[in-house]
Image (cartoon, rainbow, N blue to C red; front, side, top):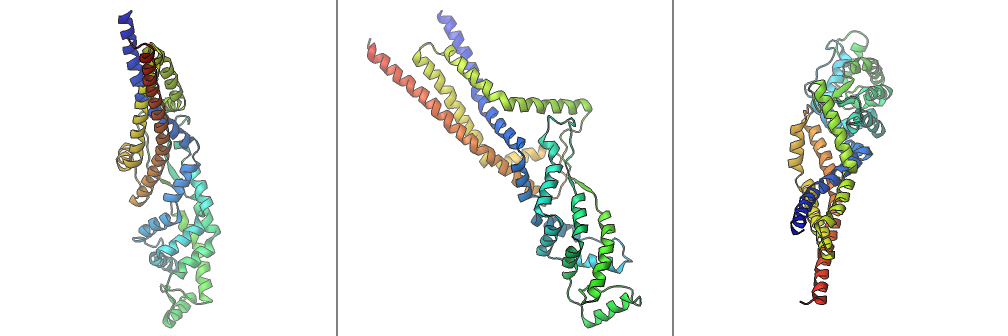
Length: 357
């Protein structure tokens, strides 16, 4: 019987080690699943750090440095091109506020990132994440007048000589428009010409931007296996912690043979699991750069560095969201574990008092 008890204790110890290691991981996965199952928080973070007017203005400024007019023979296009190059950051922010207001950006993000949020449940096992620019292009045409007023208004006012040159060009005598903001009525004339050419300009832009995230890229079998793996991970994240707690409860009487043993076996595994949860919470909050570096090495990203920095800011925020409940779990488990060990000591002293021999 003594040999059997030792064997059962060893089995119980092995099971409890599994619980200690897997319970914190399962709880962390469950929290991550809750965040991505309600993606509004993630969408809000993307809108705050990545696809906002300030970020889009900075990206556009970089893109305009080497921009050439689509039609070098079109004087209006040449003027607009020069205006785009001279626009400062604040003006670009105003343009993007008109072209892509926050509610439109929110809609675009929700549509563009829908597949990654549904990984493991979407029939496409290898989604391509892209940003749909068509709603923005349509909105720019709707807001053409105020947008073009900002663009042309970024040019310096025309001198008298430039006004004469503009007048000659408007009458068909001159050959080009000087890069300046003309007075009325020439201003309205230039604005109308620019508005006419705007749809053609927008047609030269892509309808979508593929940000180059590929989760597999192998054969169909590999993609299917990947999707099934994500599905199984989601199931484990959703229900795994419940199974581990049940296993923990069942194993307590397997390891203990008395009230003192029950408390001890209820205490030390939960205390260790709490400590491990605390380590995970610390890592999620303090080791963000290491974690994001690992993630960036696992994904194939082909996006501007400025936007990439914003994405890592989002990742850091998500990790912080995960760290907070993990810290709470850590405190709760350590409290339960410490209480169990304390009770085992109380029971032991009570037994010694009742049976001093």
